[in-house]
Image 1 (cartoon, rainbow, N blue to C red):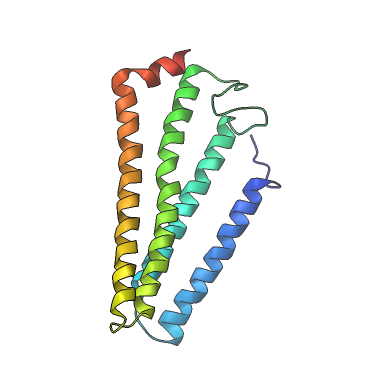
Image 2 (image 1 turned 180 degrees about the vertical axis):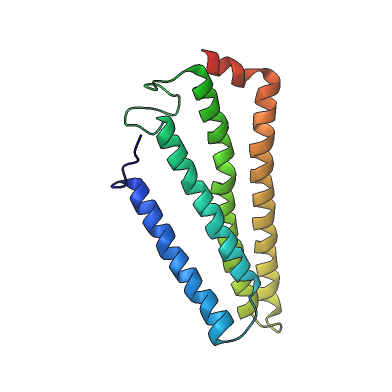
Length: 167
């Protein structure tokens, strides 16, 4: 099955390529022209791009599986496949949430690390507020990942995942 790159996937990969170009330009400016070392925001930005690309790759896999066809719902109504393919889709769909959410939190981390560089040490109140926001974002990311991990484990314990796929 050949992937049609005229729709949403084309836009997604075009934006990823534009972001890649901007990241390469920033790294070139920092390393070659300014001859400075990379900052924490640069590492967060590169890691965020990698997780965004991983998240976009799941769309290709889902398209090839046939679950992103027009008329197929998340409950796989309209899906023309066997139970093993449906089981594989649900496992991959659950796993695709990890890079998806990690991308958002890494972009927040990149922005917050830039703010740490911008606010000087004498701005005590602003830096305290910034550290409170950093703590909140870190706790939110931890909660999100724990929720994603524990919900599936709980559903497997109850037998809900296997039963739903066989219905």
